[in-house]
Amino acid sequence: MSRIRPWAIGVASLLGVVPSSVGAQDSVSTPVVAFGAFADAYYAYDFGRPPSGDRVYTTQPARHNEFNVNLAHIEAVLQGERVRGRIALQAGTSVQANYAGEPSRGEISGPEATRFIQEARAGVRLHEGLWLDGGIYFSHIGQESWISRDNPTYSRSLTADYTPYYSAGARLTWQATPSLSVQAHVMNGWQNVSESNGDKAVGLRLEWQAAPRLLVGYDNFIGNELPDSLPAATRVFNEVFARWTPHDGTDLWLTANVGVQDGATWYSATLVARRRLSATVALNARVERYADPDQVVVVTGGADGLEAWGASVGVDVSFAGRALWRTELRGFRGDAPLFPDGSGPLIRDGGFVVGSLAVGF
Image (tube, rainbow, N blue to C red; front, top):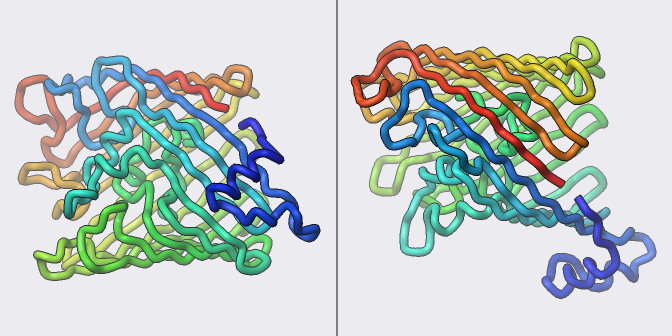
């Protein structure tokens, strides 16, 4: 990202992002504004050949048998000793897929009002190692990234696709020790900017660098996710995760979670391995299990909930540190018929192949 220094602070001051007197304070360094952009174009072929072209159950890639843009965004990032923030605007088929469930209550809410905002957050340092941030920001749940370039695999696991990618609320972040960080959140709800009811949700995230090559963590979510027209039902979600680098060039990601709501339970687990063969080439592989028999999170539209195994393999090639070519082959095996088969009845097996070219700065 390019760095814009003195004049950017004046612009930020006029917009009310930072105090105009920041540059005059000897004890505080001048904040820096950096601008960036990212675009991910892809072609995907779903072996089930969905008639509408819309693929089922995953947000990335979202379309079958067409060239399209998965995600494109532009951003401005403010970073200083006492203030920080990020504004990012986005578009793409993954955005349409991911924000389709955004609640709409009233005339100025819902996906049409919010899906183009990837992040719009502002933060202030309250004390050394303690920050308060608020706005729309990436979720505290999980360890996979919404941005494909930063994810170990091109497509997201079912675990990631069916936990929040974004939140609207406020968070406290505390770097308790050099190896332990803590986040506490108050949010509108489970991946929603517009409210679906009069309640708020809370969440926690812990990350511990247990060893130089091992990071372990825990996150949770507690809140009522039903509209006010229905009796409240508290959703309690717990997740553990770990990232281990057994030796240079090899990384393992493990994520497992379980959720409970109104007597119904769902769970998932994902294991991803990534091996860097050189400075420009890497391989990845994934196995996963997702089970939501009562359709608490995933509504299939049929009698059977989403209960399936999955696996994928992928190859990544980077160019000049700016461009990334990714290919992936992914398959699923459902406990029941869940996947399209052209214009015929649903079948138990599903899968796709995808190629993507992304560039960012």
